[in-house]
Image (tube, rainbow, N blue to C red):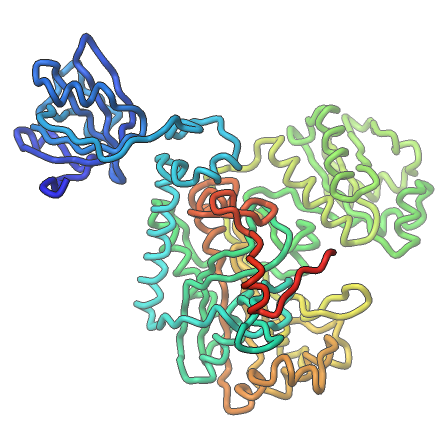
Length: 588
């Protein structure tokens, strides 16, 4: 095809091109034979155009007669208007067609494992194995192009705000950041290993110490952790760091980025976004990632049942646990018994022993637990939950340790909202969660809630080592419809304070110097106050596109077991490579 040059993309041609001689190239979407006249729909990255092959023209018609789905072809011909009754209003090119005069077959295609169209019934592993076919489908193509436009809009906004894009290395030093590292053996350093970055956290802070006032990067990150719908072993984030700022300045920049990213899909979001304290979010919604598209707030009722005879409640309280309630009233209280049974099964799957409930209709209490409650407890419960004047109510209870109760009722709350139709799927409700604890307990030891480079709140500086459980941080997370799409903080910029935080989580002296000596030195040599954020690019695009998983907005994703069906990764390396790296396989 050396003398064939494409003149137009398939989707660009319009009625205004009538009479032009054009050459288009693409894939055969479909082929139809109507009384000897062959109609071929040709598809490229930009759309579809219909080509017509008349048997009176000889060679082009006989060649087109052999075409099958996904063959790659080139067609020359004249653009003509379709007859009025043949116009296809569902296609941008539906007013015209190409009367083919010449044709070339550029490549053939064997039988397809699934159709290259949007509505298919193919298992995801098959789609991922044949990703080159899957990405031809319009819905997948549009998702990847949307991702491109989101990245472009973020870059444009940040650069207009004075940010500089700086790349940080992929091969770096292993540092504890909460997940397992992917490690890479170094042939030139006997016994030495690189780690793939879980984030550019330390290096972007060092850039602030280096005098780069505003940094950003579309960063690739790697975490060896269990996967789920919104998590992959490698992912991208919009990474931002700023010097001489406070929380409000960082949040303002982030809201501007998010507004621009959503605008590329025609979605209007209006900053400033709502803000809520971590403690209040956990109290009202049971989670620090609340879906605020609907109300349904939780209410702690521990005080109501301090002396209760109902053993499930009294046992939980005697062990230092809590009781919380989710109260529904009016039409919202009309869930059927089948719904209640299914919600109970969901609660058990989330770790609860069950899901206690009470239905109240015109003063009558219906529930397996109603007989165990005193009149005083019933009265106090109605007052606490705001149901005193309600003629129709349904109350769900969680009893146990605070972590389990909050996790379970947070899940029940969302499930109830879906069953009641309270969630507007096309609504995008952002909320900032602030004032997180600085530390949390895990297995009897303290660890940083976010990461150990997060600055303490100003009134918590003295608590870092004296009362760490009470210390709050200057961290902030951005949540959309119950999904965390980003998080950041004002950072520690002084060596003494950083060492105090590291000591509190068990990293001191020689260990701190081995792991973070290079970073501590950067802080010591005049690091400015600074802060930043990382926005999950994959999650943001997933939410904009309305997909259920980030695999649908990632060109070459991994399975939930971390495998790539397309390439066969991960795979073993040969014995020669193993020897060069000083590695040997050990049975586990």
